[in-house]
Length: 297
Image (cartoon, rainbow, N blue to C red; front, side, top):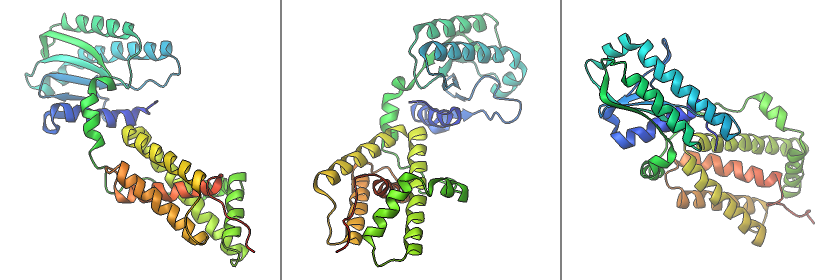
């Protein structure tokens, strides 16, 4: 799974805080004159730098990691005066390049070699047993399991869909499929009312996808569980159909089943998040094949 750099940094900070304790981790802001070669450091003598490769091949990702290690370890020397003042006599034993994955052992060899060069410089904040290492998600299995049990924010502040986003989705084949289904579901509604229902569900679809993308980037374990639950409910729907006497009941029943499944299988999700994903999933089902309604007689 590919992380965007800012999302990986946020996720990595959560893992490091769980490993060392929140009060033992200091984040180093990078908005003023960069991060000086570290994203955060701990009271347990570790410095961390995050890097999320954006390349598609192992070779290119490895080259990026090695370049990152060389560049940012070099910043310890370039910024030694600033760092010495910030650390106030503290000496560090480890500098860790934290990546989503490590597939090439050469990255480890290269990073350790660069660390040995830094250790020989006798910087005031570098301990005599200093080493540079490369860690990834596999080194934080316990912390990842702990993250699964943590509730995410009660309200995830994602920007609402813009009118341009809605316009781009309206009139597409999927949107027309949904409009046709809603017309069959509510034959008493006029064209304007059906259009309004279609717009509402389309907005829900965009919001739901945005929320799932947020979970995929920042809470990948929660995302995996949510997707598994949605897929299971879709398989059940395709096998036995929606329950309820009429379209309104079927829509409500399907929505309730999605929400109940998410609450059961992914209890760490906030209720507002569950609602947003459920509404988006219902809209997705209306756009595709799982949920449909016969012609009124």
